[in-house]
Amino acid sequence: MSDVIHVQHPLVDHSLTILRDRNTGTSDFRMHAGIVSQILIVEATRHLRTRTRAIQTPLAAFEGTELDHKIVVVPVLRAGLAMLMTVQELLPDVGVGFVGLERDEETAEAREYYQKLPPITPKHQVLVLDPMLATGGSLDETVTILNQRDPGEIMLVSIVSAPEGIQRIQSRYPDVTIITAAIDECLNDQMFIVPGLGDFGDRYFGT
Ligand code: PRP
Ligand code: URA
Image (cartoon, rainbow, N blue to C red; front, top):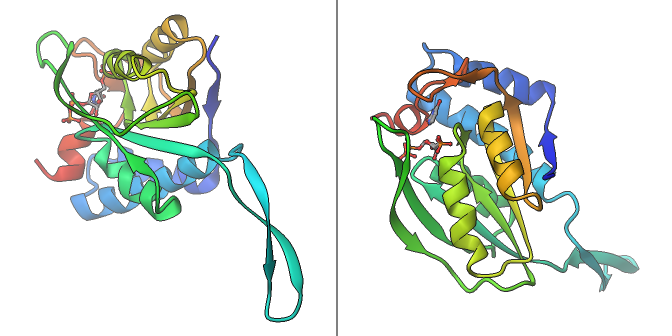
């Protein structure tokens, strides 16, 4: 069964409460989405391989480390873009691919409308960014697309997840790790996460 890492931290809980609050405006929503994303990405990269690197400080020789990992990050359009900037700040040379998916408002089924991916090999770790894991349809479709490229490891990074979506991913992709800041109660009749934070993309982009 896939691992689920529920990241709990006072800064995350503080920012999540601001994200959930219906009265939060666009600028605060963006700022706190960035803070939560940053903490999630730090967690997602905790076990990256490193290798030693010998350097000279101004005072002495020093054996340091550098990253020894190939990473591709895939934000799921459009809401995943909210998390991309943070990843690029922490991993400035990361390869970026895009998958565009939109849920049908009636059926909640994800429909693909865009795809552009860099080379992905078994040596690559792929971080998929999507702030909401609701039914799991969008991330299910994304993992199916990525698996056609034979990646080394896939991690899904989401801000708020529903148990239904987690179960779907766990049963379909036992090797995929999910990293999330919140596991909420359930989905409602419209397949929105409850208590959730509403439509993430609309709130982040001010639509
Ligand atoms: C939202 C969200 C996820 C998806 C989650 O995207 O950003 O991608 O729904 O729902 P699921 O787990 O049931 O598939 P939406 O389709 O609303 O598009 P957007 O990112 O353009 O707002
Ligand atoms: N997408 C969102 O943005 N919010 C939800 O609650 C479910 C899907």
